[in-house]
Image (tube, rainbow, N blue to C red):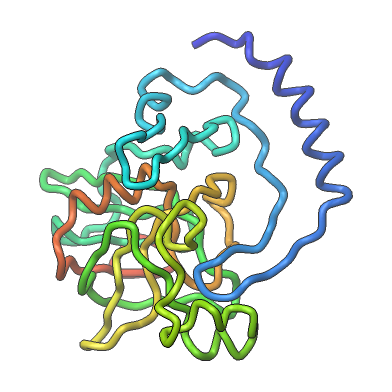
Length: 236
């Protein structure tokens, strides 16, 4: 791959450092995010296969723009890898220590996706199932979130939630995690904020780039088992 991208990287990195010195963080509840400094851009131009993988999706209900892959660490790009989890094929395993989600495939392989995770104090871990899934979902903050941030009341259940769209915190798809028949209120969902992948920035949900959550959504049926834990081995 060409290395002609390096001079642009040096300039952009200085710009990011300058912005980071003045930017402040802010927090939101639920599956929303806090602002963080952008990660350093990739030192090399992304391969054409990844550019195509994360290209625009104009045929969606709400057309999705392409991902600027220079804002995402290459290790978080979607790819087929050797399965490190030991889980049964068809299981989703989220490794909260490495910011990876694995969909275990037959033959010792797994599809690996980069994710963003909940901030400390808002995370969920355990075993459950994807009880149901939805395209372009509404977002309805629970009552405890509204109590912390009253401005969210306009999206409460009595008001029908936030309509779907690119600005909706659940993005293009949502997979709903249940445990023992109860909604955990945590989701696997999309986000257009691709610079947050690989970071602890949301209030509990597992977030993927919109292109990745669409790919995962198409691969898994309802009642897919899911394990969320620190470390991927089942003996961790």
